[in-house]
Amino acid sequence: MACFPTTPEASGLPDTITSIILYCVLATWYADWVKQIEVVAAVIIREGRVFAAQRNGKGEVGFKWEFPGGKLEPGETRQAALTRELEEELEVAARVGNFMMTVTHGYKTFHLTMHCYLVEIPSSVIVLKEHLDSRWLSASELDTVDWAEADRPVVRRVKELLTQ
Image 1: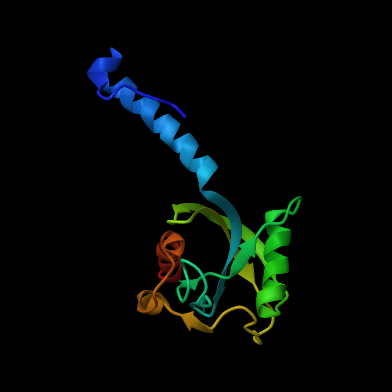
Image 2: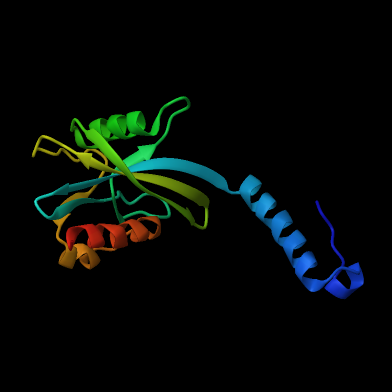
């Protein structure tokens, strides 16, 4: 455990240097203490609408809406993980397209890094195996569901894409 003087003046260092040191120590401690999760997510756009899925009731983000996907397994590429997750969760064959963005978000119990890709699915039949509900949302409907916090920056980007 790192110990610091109670005030910046007591350390003999300028306030900004003391603050930077304290921030680095706390950030390192946080990274070691909080579970780190790396996931991939699919942004599936078809006919001017994007696919959204409602999570089951488990955990901190239970019942929230998200872009489907899941955790990377050791040694797995992001594209392979996304293809696997979509087959497992939605029973669809996916064609992973262009990388869209990476989002990082600190929840209360874990820190999430989410890599988002544009994805095409040839089938119109989607079977929900992990989610409670799903919807195809237009740009004007994106704000009608309660998105998981980490998905909100992606929603903003999708809104831009849908209104171009």
